Amino acid sequence: DAGVIQSPRHEVTEMGQEVTLRCKPISGHNSLFWYRQTMMRGLELLIYFNNNVPIDDSGMPEDRFSAKMPNASFSTLKIQPSEPRDSAVYFCASTWSSYNEQFFGPGTRLTVL
Amino acid sequence: AQTVTQSQPEMSVQEAETVTLSCTYDTSESDYYLFWYKQPPSRQMILVIRQEAYKQQNATENRFSVNFQKAAKSFSLKISDSQLGDAAMYFCAYRSEYDMRFGAGTRLTVKP
Image (tube, rainbow over all chains, first blue to last red):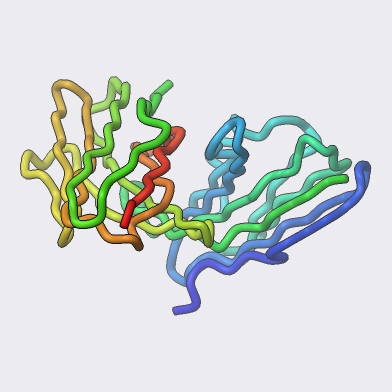
C-alpha cells in the first residue's frame, strides 16, 4: 500500500497566487482530513470529509480556503489568493471509520512570499 | 468544544531510561478514542498507540504504554528503555464520531 499521497511536497509561491494542494487517500478509506501545522498554532483540523461529503469545515480559516473531494480517491485544498500567513505544512490524512487511527500523508510545505 | 492539553512543551530523557508524557482532555462524550502520534524530524506523523475509552485496560505496544484515567480525563504515555530514535514531537489526540483534536505537542529529546 502506497499510503496517503500528497502533492506537491514543497510549494513556493508569491502572495496573491492561487495554490492547490492535492491528496490521494488510502484505497478503501472513507474519511479524509486536511490539517495545517504551524509553530504558532500547532496542528489544526481544517476540514474533513466522510464518504466524499464535507462534514465539518469549521476549521477553514477564511473564504480564501476551499476544499473538494470529487471522488473517493482524490481531494484538493485550494487557497486563493494566498497570503504569507498561509505558510505552513499542510497534511492530509485518511481513515476507514470514525474511530480508527488516521494515516497521514507526508505533508506539503507551503511558503508564500 | 473538546480540548486536548499537553502541559509539557519539552521533555528529555537519558537513553535506556523511562519517560512519561502527560495529556489531559476535556469532553462531555462517553464514546471516543485517544491516540499518541509521533512526529520525527522527517515530519511524518506516525501512530504510536491508541486507547478505546470503553476499555479499562491500558493499551501497550512494546516499549510504549499508556495510563488512561477516564474519570480524570488523563491519558499519559510512558516510554520505557528510551532509544535515540524515540526523539521526536509527540502529539496526544482525541477522536469522537464528529471531532478530531490534537494537543500542542511535547518535544522529546533523548540523551545518549
